Image 1 (tube, helix red, strand yellow):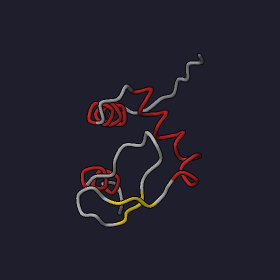
Image 2: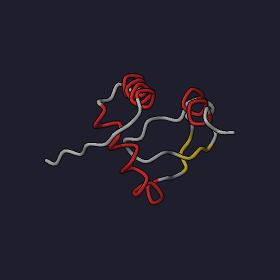
Image 3: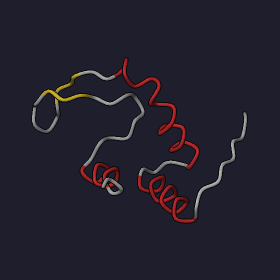
Length: 80
């Protein structure tokens, strides 16, 4: 198995580690999911029935972390 190394700032490292802990993933798994699921996502998204509301919603690709209010807030934190 290959090893990849890349540099990030101390703040970025803290944020990445915190996100991995929050999603209960290793750093490697988090980075794999965030980078590799993008390529396979379009063909795997489908409409499913929400277990809570019964509404039809879009499912994410298999293995992707669920979209929550907290994750949306985190994604939009740097948005102008």
